Length: 167
Ligand code: FES
Image (cartoon, rainbow, N blue to C red; front, side, top):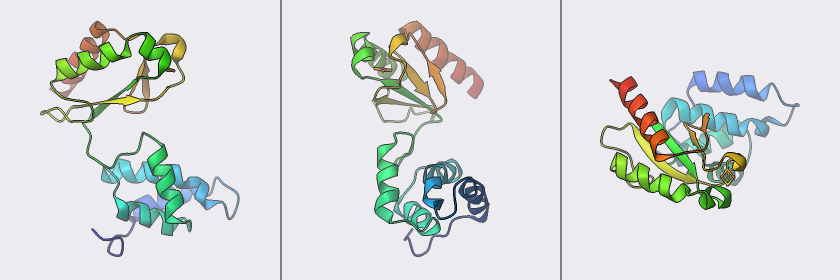
């Protein structure tokens, strides 16, 4: 879809307005992270027309929206599975064998990093330090739930749980 044809849905505009109201007048661009997050939750991976619409709506340069979008790993341009396992592979986790966790996940799920499993349930990603180095190796699932001191057994239990929940 071209940027010209796309308009933010009214429900998203209302939700963004609630965030804009939290910032001082004229600082509406401070709501950009939440605007992108809300839009991604509603419409899935974000494309250029989404970013342009957010830039226009918040009256900020497109380059600033793109910078935010590319900086944060919680934003996606490609489709991902229902459950995204972001495994930290920075130094503390790496020294505690995060690479073995990533390899185990790839083998168990039969999918490479950044791919989606055939059932659409899982995506594995590497990420930078999650700020939980003292409990390395660690990961965050769906950008909300942290898991610490990872082992292949813990990974298997979590996968089994998500599969069971999916039916
Ligand atoms: S290095 Fe993995 S959480 Fe900091």
